[in-house]
Amino acid sequence: MTTNAISAHEFADLYKQGALDESYIMDVRESYEWEVGHLKKANHMPMNTVPERLAELDREQTIFVMCAHGVRSWHVTQFLLNQGFEKIVNVEGGMAEVAFYIEE
Image (cartoon, rainbow, N blue to C red; front, side, top):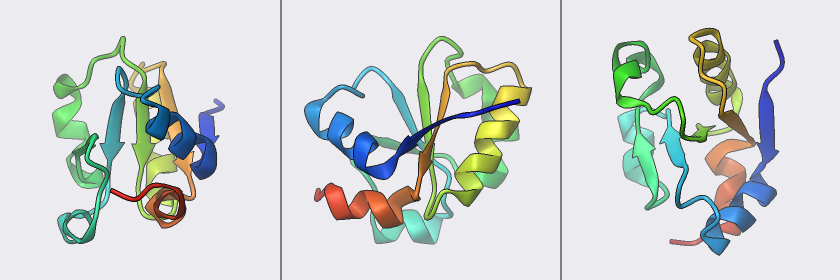
């Protein structure tokens, strides 16, 4: 099974253009990481809570999954694909890279 992925730079460009406003941006970092900084349009769903919160996700909406560096988000992306979600995109490099391109 392959995953869709987007570079941090491409994600940031789309985000700043408002092209992701109809999408769901899922930040799977822990609460202490979220509190340090996050995107205003992101939704906080720590990785370990995703299985119990699947009903909150719209299977028709494109979901961009991000974490600190792109590893946890890759695992969540794989999990969601295995659960039948099709419009899942992993943000490679995570907030560590996205933060270089987006200041909020």
